[in-house]
Length: 219
Image (cartoon, rainbow, N blue to C red; front, side):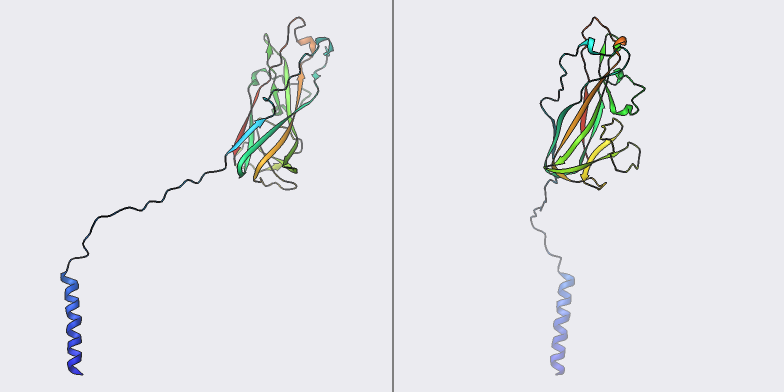
């Protein structure tokens, strides 16, 4: 038994000596493993019915009030947002004729009004935009709004107005959480308001020239 023990010890020492004196594994040629890919967010496209134009055609000057502001009939146009997958998005608006907007004292919510252009150096009036219907497929949604200040929270809109100082989005009914949808449609009601006729030229053609940009934002 003693002899067996000595042999075993010698083998262990020989292995240890081999480990110490032989260099590490020799390096050969190498190759690389790479992992590529793209995490791509859903792409969404907004579109307005037709070409986004509401045309009031001819409005007779004689039909306008000389002493009161003149509200033209509200007309509707559909806004759709279609995405490649359900996504959280919203909209903001820019008044492209803001310098021409008439601030009518009787209209309190001035941020929901947009300029109607000028005739000569005279501002024609303003137009109001409001969302009157909002849905995903056939399911009604609630309109949500958020102000521009830091830390602003989403609240349910009580008026539907589309203001230039707010971001608008939408969610399931009776919630204030922005939802993810693949397609939504919104009906926009547009109401022009012309200044009283006594402040507009009676012998010139007055072209209504309102213009607003609807910007889509990812949330």
